[in-house]
Length: 521
Image 1 (tube, rainbow, N blue to C red):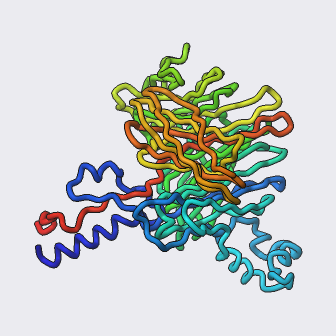
Image 2: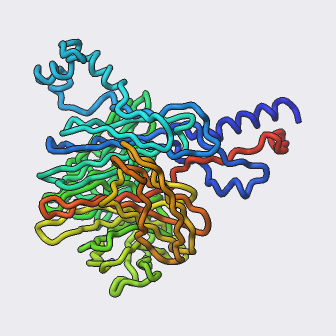
Image 3: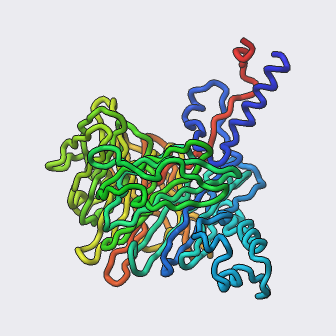
């Protein structure tokens, strides 16, 4: 083998072990088993983006960061989340704003007034959250509407499986309740079925740019009759290392209850999430649906859900009749009256499924005939009785191929829901050390084929603070999972649900000794 070929192999090996800024294109870990001479190694660098938590002065936000212990990871590295350097602000703020705000922003640690621009720059560079060791989560708190969007990177021993979450409680007003979202990777395309431009809703699409150059984004909206006419949805500029919240109702004059949002990045890349706030039923984050597919799983609908509304969309012109099944503790069942749902190509459809779970754990499984027509979907879930209801969203999720983590768990109020719609599976669940103390605990569970189980997840011994739950697929599958956080405030059942997509912390790397003479051809 000549020197040129060796150089190419070395370059490919180095590139394969790095995911870039959480470049979510890390290969399927199972591919390593199908490739002779390939090894599965921890990724060496990744990144996450967290949207601005709230515009409410009553908001109380907790940021949490965590990396599981990973065999074979480097013994050095960092994982840091920082405030986005440039937050969107009214013009008067950009020109200097209110003097009192300027003085507040410009005070140093001794309370002395300093240069405002310099201080803001220092604040942007100062870590909001930094991990000290794998296996132990850390938290930071922020109050009010000033809690920032975050941009972060992890490398070395912290990169593989790095996860971050923000959980916000809003005591009153539009969107009151518990709002949670897992921080996500930058990408170039996102689908959000379940948004709204109705007068009762205040929905924002949050765009966060991690890079040093501007990103240009198009936002397309699709309603019940097709694409909505938008006025300023094209060519939205997101400044470098900044966050841009866009109110959906300002993009179109059409008021529709159920809308699918399609985010397409023309240049650069962004993180994206929809914050859906309701006047009567609180609000929560709507993460992006899994990529359009002929088979979707929406995991972990709470067993005490009082209303479930499915919103689905198929890109293109082809119609499709979706087969609907509920993966319950006893197996796959077909909801009476909702055996199939008809979707028209390019039009958003919504279906009220009522009290779908009826007191049992459940996950929706949607299937197009032969998987030939791709679909995106999400459900809006209500808990509580009329007048004291709270809402949350569960989009179609990616499976836990190897490992996934949920953060900010507490000894009470945490429910871990796991489903194996196609075949039985064995999983291992690890409760990390607590943020303020506690010893990790691990349990193994068997999930029967076609079922959903709300499992009794382990809790760290001597827990103080919150902790992480890491789910690993040991055999069988595919496995889908979600985690629900719940509490009761003033008789209202606050809750938020996060799906657990695979953390893509491992990557298949070709063995440098493998004969790649094909590269010389």
